Image 1 (spheres, rainbow, N blue to C red):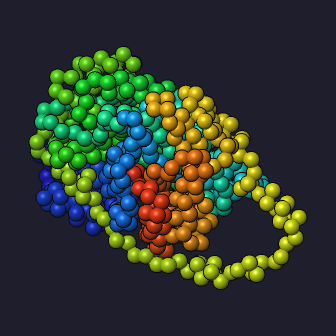
Image 2: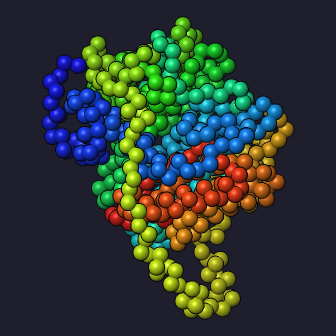
Image 3: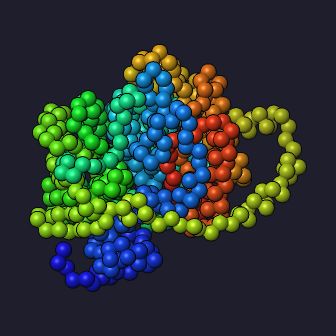
Length: 556
């Protein structure tokens, strides 16, 4: 790059728009040896150092989780966790949130949440065989604007989940849904998927081998979802609906083709590593694949299949268009891979290769448009030690007892319970999900406790459950989180299975609020304690922060 070493125009505004602090900009200057970054490089740092991608506020507490056991094949750090389920078979599973996009555009937000978690599973080499979800909505009763919008969100989210999962042919076999006014401005949409794979046929998201080609497969890249990871790392305000363009648009039929093409590819010997282009798109997949091995990459962005005209290097690196994968292939395998994906009607292109520089070099029509070291961006994101403070509301909560409320007779209590939406029949929700496709479901939604599927390959069954009481987590964050683990474990045990491990999905408010960070720290301590007692290590998971609107955080 021959550009002069000067800061870009309107630097303060650019940093604000990219959610980067002045301190982080000084780190960037250090990493670039004093050179001021261009807009493409600022966009890359912004995405990779966002809460959504870097976990910079939560890493300190996540490190304490138990993650190993004799049956754990792959723990946190990959696209999904993997455990041994006997007879040469493994279960691959993970849970992730898609909260912010689903509040802005409920159908596409929820649908692409399902699509993203499915890709996390089959990029590991596994065929997805079961989905769950955990949903939290606000007040839906009444004629207020909030209630009307929340009903719109419920309809859109449920439709999006059902549409994507049903079209993919993956059964949604269980889940949970609850309602509380704390979610009026920020709903929670958590999606879980589990797949099966032979335990010796697992693929990882790595790039290695100097000269090996880097290949792009799947859908073309557009501007949809541009900046989605950064958007998901900020709180909501009244202006948030203007963020609709940052919500991805999904196509389950294309993803079904991508699934089958990838599974066909995995039967060959052409793949070194493969990574889903999820949050932060091509940026995160490329940096994470190379960062794990210390390799370098050179990529020609003008070779990336484009859906729109006039796209820039910034657009290509930060788009979150759906149904895309990045492959590090073995040298000489290019045409064989091209043939597989073209057979399935998908875009495929060789866009770069592995180098020994440990740097990311991005080219645009022969000109270098970005050049930066990979490890400091992908593996050395800032780890924040945010202040914590016990919430003052707990004093009021702890001062209450059963005597603080007026006595009610049994009939009144009975009628109040039956009229509460929390215990009403949720069949309207789960009847929109196909729970029987693939014909392996033993316990379907509405069957109580855990859901179960049979495993044809080894004659066993797998039980899984998602559970959490946010009110418990609000009044006692540590015990509430521990109880979520214990309740899910009990559900699995009551279905006749032995709990083996968990995936978590931790949804909290604004980490810049010390009381929220105290809730998070206590919640992690509760999960750790419960997992140690049950011997259920954490093998995968997700953290979603900034779940607040106009300064009001959700129940965790």
